[in-house]
Amino acid sequence: MHLILLGTAAGGGFPQWNCWCPACRVARTDPARAHPRTQSSAAVSADGRRWFLLNASPDVREQVARLDGHAPAGMRHVPIEGIVLTDAELDHTLGLTLLREARQLQLYATDAALAVLTEDSRLLPVTQAFATVAVSPLPLGVSVPLRYRDGADSGLTVSAFAVAGDPPRFARRTLAGHTVGLWIGDRATGGSVAFVPGCGELTGPLLTCLTHAGLVCFDGTFWSDDEMIRLGLSDRTARQMDHLPISGPGGSLEQLAGLTGPARVYTHINNSNPILLEDAPERRQVDAAGITVGHDGMHFEL
Ligand code: MLT
Ligand code: MN
Ligand code: ZN
Image (cartoon, rainbow, N blue to C red; front, side):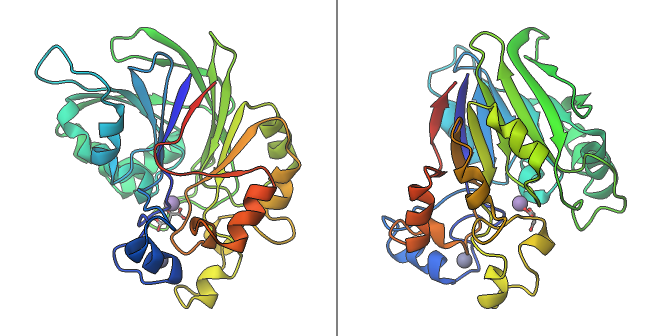
């Protein structure tokens, strides 16, 4: 299976349009020292031609251009066979409506995320006014085949597992499975990816599960718990925003450092996070732990 990190920034992107925090300043003035990044999304494919998006970001238009490696035979070409969601947050779903020109889409999401998309953000009915969207509910803990739009089996499977967090702040209900990690498997190669861009807590059972993956893409939103408070950008801690910080006791760096089997990559990195600076000491700590700071376009084969 191929996996491309299409967007490695959290909501708002990097630099964020209205932000002049230290990292956003460097991304504008000296992008070689802090590479700009688009909003959180990845794509997986068994054959390198037909892709499944993992989340649909507001930057999907420029992100999909990375998937167009060949000139199509016809007038219209949709390289996206389906979209798999980890949650119904805006940075992971606004791209759905932007793909409406596809006319035929497939959406894989948990019942909880589908409820938010239907009742709260209404992004699903809005998209369905323009395109036929075949919806496949993802039951928790069940491996589901990812099918091409013509119904053929891609050979990839997805299994959703609930992770700690709250539903989006605009959701009226809290249903189990509103935020999940995705386990993507390739039956032909035996390769696997655990894709977890948003996670409030790295519990023992989750860590054990991640051990068996070939690649772990994990929530790299914040470096420290009080990062946004110290910068004067928010009054909430990382944990209050359901993102386990990288540093500190119980942080993801400490826990993922011990996970020596899989390749480990941080993604969904907030623009305030100092690891975005190529020469920051925090970046060196992540590198020293053998963990990669994800950037847009990074490609893995599993
Ligand atoms: C998150 O990752 O916590 C959400 O995307 C928040 C947001 O949309 O601002
Ligand atoms: Mn987000
Ligand atoms: Zn910023």
